[in-house]
Amino acid sequence: MTLKELLSLRKVPYNEKQTERITRAFEFAKKAHASQKRKSGEKYFTHCVETASTLVKMGLGSITVSSALLHDVPEDTDVPLKQIEKEFGQEIAFIVAGVTKLGKVRLKGSLEEYYLDNLRKMFLAMAADIRVVLIKLADRLHNMRTLYALPEDKQQRIAKETMEVFVPIANRFGIGEIKGELEDLAFKYLDRKNYEKVKKIESEEFKNRVRYIKCAIKELKKEIKKENIKVLDIHGRAKHQYRLYLKLRKYDMDISKIYDLVAIRILVPTVASCYETLGIVHKKYKPLIGRIKDYISLPRPNGYKSLHTTVFGPEGKIIEIQIRTQRMHDEAEYGIAAHWIYSQGSTWKDFLFLRRNGYNIPKEELQWVEQMKQWHTETGGRSDEFWRSLKIDFFKNHIFVFTPKGDVIDLPESATPIDFAYRIHSEVGNRTTGAKVNRKMVSLDYTVRNGDLIEVMVSKEKKLPNRDWLNFVKTAYARSKIKGALKKGGITVV
Image (cartoon, rainbow, N blue to C red; front, side, top):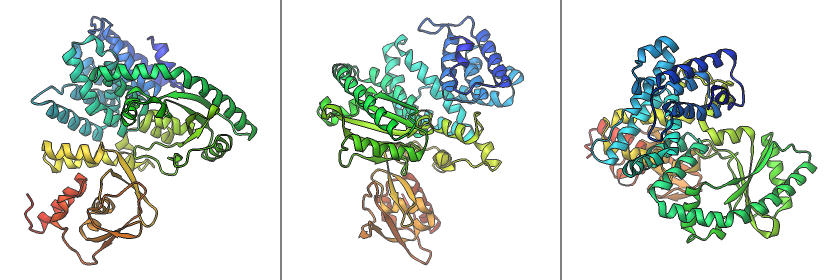
């Protein structure tokens, strides 16, 4: 890929200063890696450009893209980090140093300990500068695309690490495009038999689905146009292979029960036109009861927004349709990166800098990163505590519940009213005496469900939490607060 081709990948062109910075980084890295080749036989510099290209497509700024082009220079060439700082400044040098540190994670002990060590460093890097981890995700994406060149044992280890470490982080950032491709690439190496089976099932059914999807698109375009709603784009979207496999497992590998093998995606200008379009779709095609999902009013925990409906389309065949604005689409594909690009303009700004200077940014989007850093300190880096909090609080599937005032709280699946109480405030948790779910009294170990309305009763007087709560709370956050309060109250907790 040439420099011109790289720059052309961005929807909003870089200005003269930004282009000059990326050009200098491109030429500098190209010269530094000139004599190197990868296991695949490609020039090593190809990897730097491919890593940068993912970030350019995401719309990220020239500092992030330049850092991506330079990310392997200190580790894999004779050029020291000080020279990068001299040539490109402190900010780029800081990001490159962060990526280099992540690259130095080596296998020690068990695979789980290795993944944990990698995750710990990833979270600490995130708390310092999110751009470090975005570059690392783009770096891993290209490494997975060229994994065929490595020995089988390395393929297995890297694919497993990708599924255990990089996929959950991409998901938490809401970067659907990278998450989906990483899952598919890892699936190919981790479970070749089922990968080939899914490919076969998919290829046999895909052509039939595409034919009637095209028919539905043609009809919907006509109907939406009649109502004077501008359609920015309407297209079919094939389901990722790994996600298809997980669904097929639920239905005994019966493809006829999978309605979103190819879904229709409709992009319209505004939120209001999303709901108008939903009405038009339902007027044209009868919807399936219980299959309408409003992720605009109630976004997923990673920020995903869209309207989903499943309808009886042409020939009475069932189709899933997604309706969203361009902004929602970009944020679904590129997650937190797109969110800030829309919030702050066409360039990426450092998260901590924005917070210090009072910019209006979505703190909740990255609250979990800072929380994770705090817990890493509280647990002293102990593997069991840290790994538990990662698996439950951050990477488990999440549900939405409501406070009596209608505020939305996201919790991991299987959470309890006590977990909910501590999410509101640690003192609310400590003073909890009872709970109502959907206005009915429940036990404090009750498993809350998606959409539940939860109200906790609290003591007016200061009190210590019940030590027995540790037997059933699910989130590491609630567990740590309970233990902390008991310890302060002089109660020993094992």
